[in-house]
Length: 294
Image (cartoon, rainbow, N blue to C red):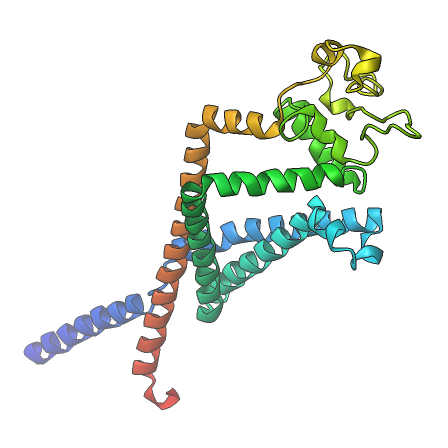
């Protein structure tokens, strides 16, 4: 009897250990990865929704929805960038957030795939910019010229150009101040000139004169202002040149930001794939223990 009792107690102890081991084996999904991925994507989701909301609000305020047939109005509208980026970020955040919370492998796969596309697109863009510097520079120049041409057609575009010229690069025009002659409001008119003819926006003026909204009126008309007047009142360097100088001066900071952004993307892809692997392992073990549900 004592031997049987000892045997029974031993079997019971082994049964407890086996039951504990089985219970432990059922928890394959890492809660740290799951909720870290969920929390980060909630922030990404809300950020995408915010960007999209800003774009919609800007279009409503400017009544852009009634002018959607005009492609030039849409392409050079900064609000359009908010709409596109916000929509994409919203979808990515939704896939990552709901996929992690509901342990949905399809949504997690979509999240990883989207991040992978962004990562390789950025990598390809960087390589192309490095290989075709002059062509990229010419393309940027053409876009800046188009922005100057449409300066007064969109308030957001006007604010963006003013911020670049006045606050960021402290420049005027694309290559030189005379580039503003490509805008119908600032071009030098021989016949029927008006107050802004042969001028530049006030954002081109030095800080001492920028408070005067008329500081750039007629400043490029050498017959009225004299040859040295514009040198004393407005920036002489174009924004393309100043942009190149700024990039060279901040190349280390830009590189660090780009690398950190790439690392975050790689971590997001790895976390989503790790969680997918845990979920699939959990499913396979459950189907192994419950073969009738296969």
